[in-house]
Image (cartoon, rainbow, N blue to C red; front, side, top):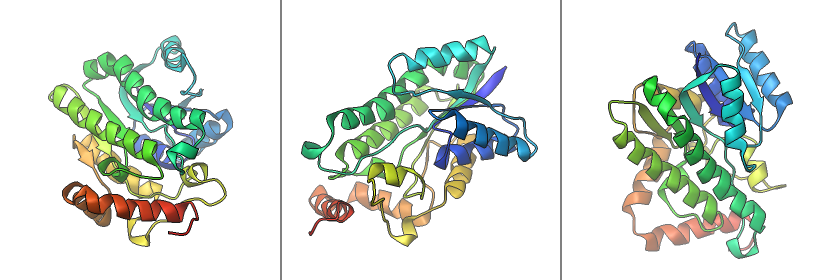
Length: 261
């Protein structure tokens, strides 16, 4: 049975994408660390009258997690036709002062796991003429002092997705979804006790991001940036000199940490 596999599906953008995909009649497999939260998402989708998703509680950052995921899917007779790589996290703070395990964990989940799952399931995806939806960020377009690894990891997601889209042209769809700030649990995990604040014009709901992202994915668009002002941020980040972008980004990062500029 062909399914749409969504990682990081227990909340935020991943949960919202699951609801949108379910409305299109997809059979879903939801993956995240918390079985209870996955059950709640699956129940909510079923309550809307859609087929209840399969759930797999798994920490994808653990060694061998991708193998265990593939084995669990095979045991249920499921083949991945569409893959949504949404799992990931960020950390606010200067690299030299950061927790080493947490910093390296970001690389592991945001880059390695996304890449490994794509490689592992790509034969099934191509056979089904399906697709890969990778969740990047507007952060993909600029360096982020104060969140250096997170921004760099999202730059990887965008570059990887665009290259893969070209490689698989005519065989499968590949889309990079690059939203701006979305109020989710991401902010508290990134900056415990303070969260993250962003200009109102840049903020969008997870539901709207999911709807625009999924529509672009079904249309075969290579990149989707939801929201006019987020598109402006991406445009100016690409076309402005780094000598201007970096100091501005540093001021924003300093405010996030609660320090005097």
